[in-house]
Structure formats: structure tokens, C-alpha cells
Length: 248
Image (cartoon, rainbow, N blue to C red; front, side, top):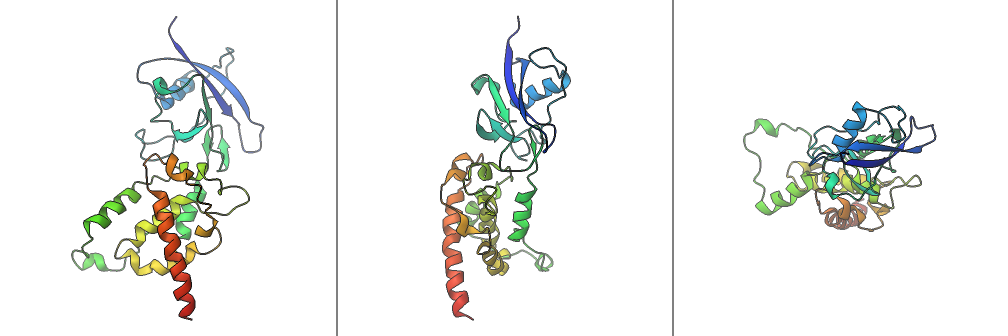
């Protein structure tokens, strides 16, 4: 008999339905990942008891750990299913949706709040006409290197999932948005609106709600130095508060 992999998947047809666990047996092949296993279930949606069921819903896009869409809980740990190789996972393999975002169906969640938080802190550089004025200001190599680390964020939600301060009783915007403020403020053009972003971080759900658990950095698939950005912006917002008050 060919080797099979056992998956136990948490399922729910819609946000108002009761969730349940369903077991599947998937044919094994070399170098398969969780996404390829889910595709096998999609092709043949029959559970381990031989019952025809609905295909499991999940998100994916790039399949190379760049887009963050396929993030889920795999054996209780938050990670991307495209880079989760079957040979390196303890079996049976348990799949569940992220818990810090609204459920859509099965393994699909709505991460819209992360993009709303980026908007809240104006995590972009506005076009101000400098693109027509030739080469922009030179940026020191060290600043470029630090910015590159922050630019690797794929808004996957791993840091939000691991953060104890992100919950239904909190409006904390989370580490990803905070780190993007650090990234944009480090750019000479972005720094023109530095105060605006710092004030946003000083508002409701801002940086003061961080409990410094440091789980975010431990689970980040891109190893972004999130705690460094949080510490840096803690100091920046404190100074903004002091000198902003003195300037009144």
C-alpha cells in the first residue's frame, strides 16, 4: 500500500456555523508541502471515513513565502503552508485557521484589519513632486540595510497571531504596522510626515498597548527585527510627546 499522510483539519462553513474537525488521508509524494496536500483534498474531497465532503477552503498565491496569504496554524504553530514541508512535520498534521482574524471559511480568514492599520499610520510615502527633480537624496548604506530588513514584511499576520496584546478586548494595531512606520520614517521623503505617523502611534491602539512579549519577532518568517523598531519608536513617540507639549 502506498504511504499516506493523515491530516486533521478544523472546518467551519461560515463565521456563524459551529466548527468541527475532519480527518483526511492524502497520498504521499516526495517533497510535498501542506498546500500540495490541500490540493489533493480539493481534487478528491473524501474524508478518512470514505465520506464525500466539501473541498477544504484555504488561501494561497505566490507559493514561495512572499505573499503571506497561506498563513495558518500548522500543528499549533503559525506559519506559511507553502513552505511547510510534509517530511519535516509531526504527524498527524493538524491544520487550523488563524485565531486573531475574522473567520471566512475553514482555513480562510479576513486580514483586512492589518491593511486598515497600515492606513491608520499612513504607512506610505506620498508623491510630492520630487520624482520630477532628478535623483533623490542619498541614503547611507547602513540605513538602507536596516530599511531592507523592514521592507520584507508580507503582512502575513504571524506577528498578530502570536501577540497576546492582539485580542478581542484590544485595539492594538500590532507589530507589523509599527515596524512599517519605522521603515517609512527612515526615508528622507517619508520623514517629511514623520510627526503625523508618530502621533498616530500615540493614539488609541498605538504603541503604548505593546506589552513587550517579543513573541512577534520569534514567529516572523522573515526574521524582521520587530522589537528593535518597537523600542526605537517608543523613544521617538516619547520625545514627540514631550517636545510637542512644550511647543504648544
